[in-house]
Length: 412
Image (tube, rainbow, N blue to C red; front, side, top):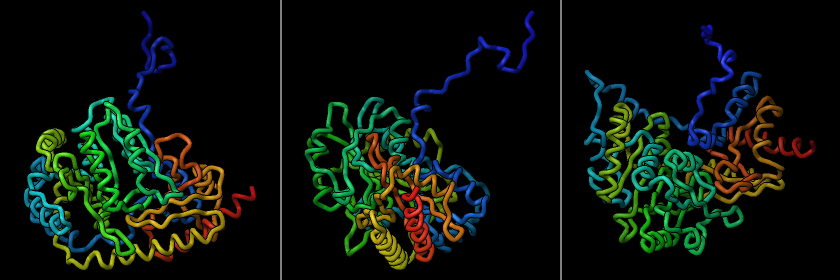
């Protein structure tokens, strides 16, 4: 009788279990993949300015944190799978103030905007179906599409065109018999581009012509600059059955850790399908719903100060970038991101080098290499995304590091 041992080395005939194709093809996050290098830099005593991730340093409003602290709750129960009715009714007021008319039964509260995106893809597309997304795009769209077995079909916006919506001809060429949806983020992550009413009407016409869903990620609607205002896809004429609004409190109230979002549509069939996914995960987090509900009651001037702060950070970041020889950076119209093209051979190698081998006055910076925001291989190789979520003093010091780093890097 053979002796059974735990060591796999004695069983050359026993293969290792194999992970799924879905698991092996899941893309890594361009926002977080360099985190181990940043952690190592900090252990060496180097200060790291984090411009890689949309985590604001603006304080979460005390009033909404207090709403959670002062909750008199005897049992932390499940909520309704769609979320607390009281919160959904409060969101009806919030959306009405933003020219979006819905009722509380057309809202499903989700675990962050991420779950809203996943619900949209899973409810509306089958494996093998296609979704058109202008690139560069928020990298997790690709991850969620991979999870669902859905094919991303990119159409290119470019830094030379300030990342404007590609022409209608590009969409027409991309539509096939498997196309089911178009996805946009407005204002855009990672580019900061703010879509105009004319561009949204182009999307409306394409969706109506080809009977497509329009997934509209509007996480940054409060952050629009230069006197421009946000136009929600929910306000487009004749699109009641086509538009799915994807939302989150994360950026709006500097509450990223709350993990509360919203899935909003007037299409009852889609709502019914999404509700089954919502029931499968039981309910969204209760404490964060309390926080989100309290946020709707913040004074109207809350965003005035926050908006002014981001506007000033944007202006500082972009002016500093444009002053560096060889750097190209369009002026973002919204959100709190900028895309820049750097005079380097490969932005991922450069960003890793910044964390492994460079420091200036004891500090360095972390950026997100842009290739991960593109679906098309080879695109974005010299670009980076920078999040202007730090105070102006830190942004200035981070730009000092970048300016010096480019001088050193290009002499190697």
